[in-house]
Amino acid sequence: MGRKKSFQQSEILKIISTVFVKYGFEGTSLDDLVKATGLLRGSLYSAFGSKRGMFIDALSENIKQQKDSEITITLVIIAMMELAAKDNTIRRLLKQWYKESASSNVKELLGRAVLKQSGILKEEEKNSHGK
Amino acid sequence: MGRKKSFQQSEILKIISTVFVKYGFEGTSLDDLVKATGLLRGSLYSAFGSKRGMFIDALSENIKQQKDSEITITLVIIAMMELAAKDNTIRRLLKQWYKESASSNVKELLGRAVLKQSGILKEEEKNSHGK
DNA sequence: ATTATATTTGACTAATCAGTCAAAAACTAT
DNA sequence: ATAGTTTTTGACTGATTAGTCAAATATAAT
Image (tube, rainbow over all chains, first blue to last red):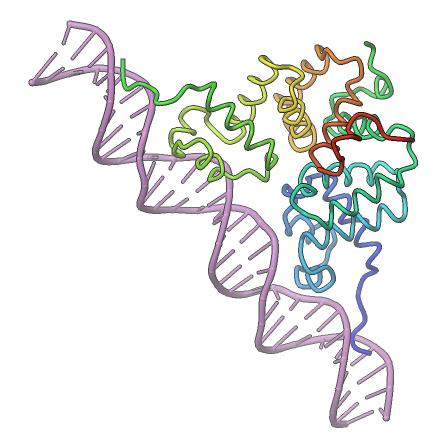
């Protein structure tokens, strides 16, 4: 019953993910998310409750669906750098991700993604650092 | 001539560094910096010009004085995740740091610091991940 | 068609943000 | 002491922030 949702939650979470990846958590404003999704604030809030809720749902969805994708890794790093220390729920999510991570060298995976986000690496040097 | 500075720039930069490390760049407010340093906004602005200036000076000082300390690495990661993509000056600074980095495995160094910042690692497991 | 329920709409709010600036204070040189 | 210079002070500003909510709209069940 009731009015139908005008959007698919998982599609919106994909868009939300790219915005958080681009600007970080604190660097992303609700207006950024409103513009990117095409939804209005009220719709976003009724679907996710808060900006934090939007981030958690985006992170969870990404972890569930594509554990080692570039977007997932970047969201994980943003969560670790900006949120985990003060947010138990997010820290638990990240612990789970860490435990189940398929990569043989998570630290290097994270470090590579940090370097990539910074834009200081040219394409050719993305895999190893001559040292 | 003129009134003497009531503080030593390098001491204030140490304090500023710890605040940015704790809250990130976007997550740090001027009020946070005012409280932590004990200086007033006007003094901070006349010394550093802007919040970005405070971060750049803190990062530069740390890179110059203790290239591979924990605080330096964390500031580097914050700069890489939040600022480098859109700020040429900061990206140049980071490129220089990367080029001159003494570590044999920068990616792992960065990844370890990200994990540490998140608080998901217990002390015993900080150096290797059983996998 | 009426009732009940779920979603959308977007103007609104209170709080917080980075940054400014004129006046006061503290210093040096003469 | 006076003039010249620099720093400090903190109230102020306009912009932006996350979040709210009553009204409008759209759907399903009866």
